[in-house]
Length: 174
Image (cartoon, rainbow, N blue to C red; front, side):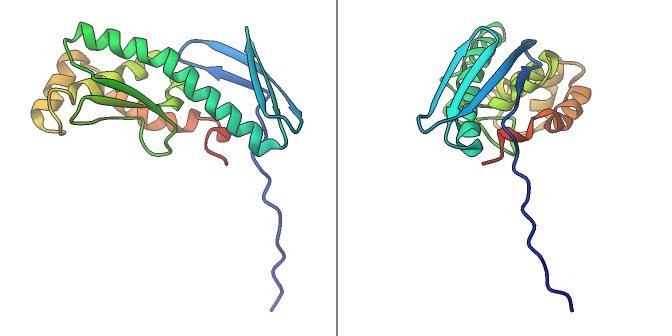
């Protein structure tokens, strides 16, 4: 019997850069330790000050949610208008298991991590959620509507599922 030694699990570092595949934007991250918590975004740069890496990642997650709302919401609403779908509200969250959802009240929730996916895949997710405004299930009618709007939906659905591999670790690491 050997005693087990405890090893420190390395924490996810604060990223040096953040890249959005959706918009082809790249931001350099300048993180410094400090008691005051702040995040300042300038063109191509994000200055983060926090007491530790955990605090810096939390500030970056908040910024990511705001950035996602700014970039995703107008695109979703434009597509909804084109497809004559009614969206009451758009919510952006940071979820580990869902890219998006649509409530019976017409709220479409989007994952902030969609920014790390390509435009074609994000558009497919929008189509999927907007189809739920017409069919609140995954019935044959739902999939017929999705296919009518996006004929290559099967490949895009596989790409969406594989998209979790493109999300940087810091997004979910507390």
